[in-house]
Length: 332
Image (cartoon, helix red, strand yellow):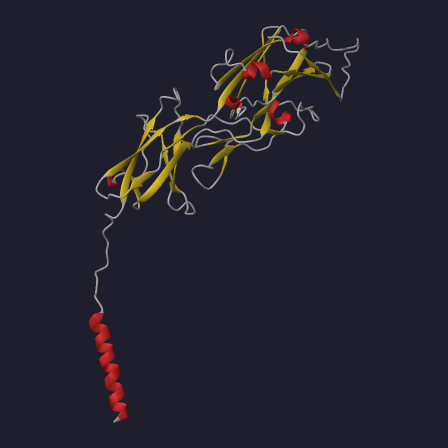
């Protein structure tokens, strides 16, 4: 009898559990997604036509989550279409997001950071020899404690404000105004004596930004040197143009870096000469350079006494291992 009572209790309990369960059909409806498209404003990036763009989407409410990445190549009509157009473009779960977008057709640019606000572009450590393309070792540097970094590629980027995407019935538009995340420097040095006797030349500029934040264009802390080739124009003029992330992140607060330009010459007989010039005043002069994205340096090279090569009658050209150089005052 006791066993019968126990079995009856267990049977009744199981029957109650089964009757309390509610069976639900599996849901295959994907209308729980929100949808978004991207609208670029190129007004402040005139002439930019990168081959493709990357779109990084960050969950603003959960910054520890993985970044959602999309990529789009430039179409024949000049548009960048992300996601599946037939399904409404980009699909996201309802939530609060921020997006950062930038062109991906670069080679020298590297990235670091986990959130939209600290996502940073930089380039690897390089050398004066690599930057100037001069195959001589032990080239002197104006600021030995600064890293020499690679010249950055052309880079454009922008970001959205935080967007709350809650409705599944509408398409959200991500408005992104793109801006250059690099600046250009062109340098003209006139009246260089004996330039016709030099076969190789290059230069390096110190005190430059080593990185830039992609979302708002703020320059990273710390300084770096960038080295670059030069070209001869006519018989006595050297010209160079290169890109940088920028310089002096706190210039508006009156805090500026020192910028030393070092110019290197290798003569036909192997002699190696260099001259270091402080060009800080021109770099920071807002009358001479009102546009911080386009810096122009114009220098008088008459104070760079590059000698004539020493070649004896037999045509023997001595090899000179050491660099000879000096600091000179700049003339605007």
